[in-house]
Length: 210
Image (cartoon, rainbow, N blue to C red):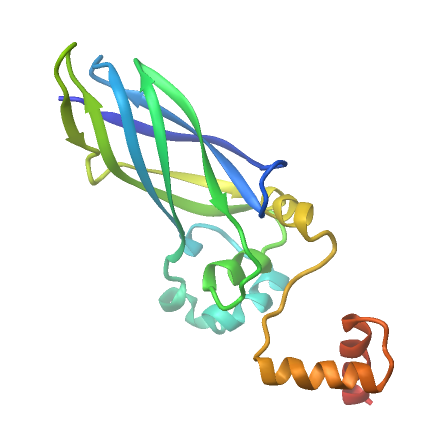
């Protein structure tokens, strides 16, 4: 019976992707000596916040997600980050493949808000695999599902995530507003003859603080 093992060897920001993307470098090993003709791989990627420590600045930034530290024993639950798919060509023994992990500044998604809050260290990822393995002797085809319990852990370096974001949005972040709010901000900027959105928001913040 064909059997696969998965290991994440590292990660890099994808320099050529059209949107912010991290390439997770996977090694897939077939442990029984059976040649694999092809593999239709699916991967669920979760963040497991309880698997790392947080400094005071990170704790303050994560309060919106998990509340006060005194409650973290109850609130540090896994966060869904992404579902990705990959067709893997045939191999014998083992194969190294790259799995594209899309990144975003969508702060309505808890996982992206979590990533933005981290300053250093690693993001504790859990990769859960399923899919279909195609094997067989010449002239035959055998189809086997990837065993449901196949998984691997990886600490994604925070600088890799920041590099992927900075490559597309250097020195910037995105904030989604309701259209009514945007219209009011647009009118304020035009009325005050301000050159940019940062100028409008900084002016409003200054007026509020004064």
